[in-house]
Image (cartoon, rainbow, N blue to C red; front, side, top):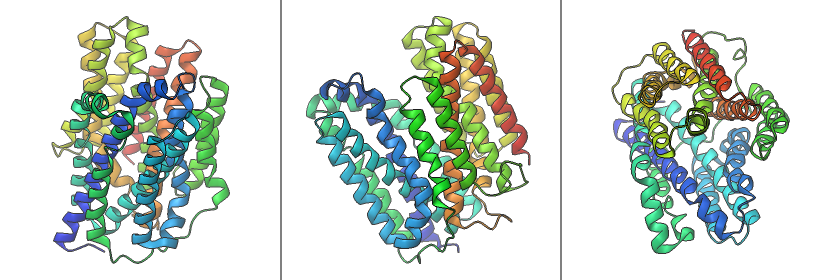
Length: 410
């Protein structure tokens, strides 16, 4: 059901605002991590400090359709906001790592619910052309936080402390929520038939193994395999067999996330330890791909297979190496490729076609595909690099991206 023009704009603006708040949250949390670890005397428990939000997100994915079906539109948004604000307050007032992680778990759970709700609302109410624009604009929402987020966060932390700074994203989340509520306040409860809960909870169980492995690669690999099994239970039938249409697009999304986010997670290690590049130069390369992705997304060009091929080539160059300008150019080209591919791939993966999936199931599937792909990519990269195969991991990432380009043609 397509909304009137005014309500469609409110919904699109709300989804984009929620993405901006997610970007702000990400950069605030990552920038404050060393300060939080020092203040809570948790320098040897970094895994616990960062695990909460990740695990909360993965717990939310299999539960989202049940929550939407039980609480409906307003109830889900209210519950998500309460869990988000409450979790931030708990984290901001924590005096030990365990309580901080508990607060982050609540914010991750809320972020997962809000993400599924926002994507499912966009699928249900926005036509494909507008959804393409929303995805492109959402990608662009990471430009400003990437450029000024770390410096602004450190400045604010110096003025008011990390506890108050942790609450900075709240106004942006509230603003996005108000826009979404204004657009879809009369939606009926979602009519869904959730998949068996036991199998879908394999995703957060496997994610716990990965994020809490603390560098022990056998646990990380085992967790990744368990999460992959849970992902198969959530994704629509035919995804593993690459059935044409939505299943193939979701499979391409998984492969893309494995390749790109796996490579991104190790890029500074590759440059500094592998090629002897300075940390300052590595930071420049690190920012090149997401900025190129965001800017290219705004161009309006939608070339999934071509874009993923460019990303695969850029990643393959990193596996071989070269002087700093070559490495910078390669990762920039990789980002340009993502900008060309991602919006159209995302829309294809979130379009029902003949799959018969509801909007909520599609939203859960596309978020699961991307998030579990990230988890698998980081687990693969961590395991290979720990075994001395840092360069080999980039060859694996390039192969995954090339496979994503091939599958996207289906």
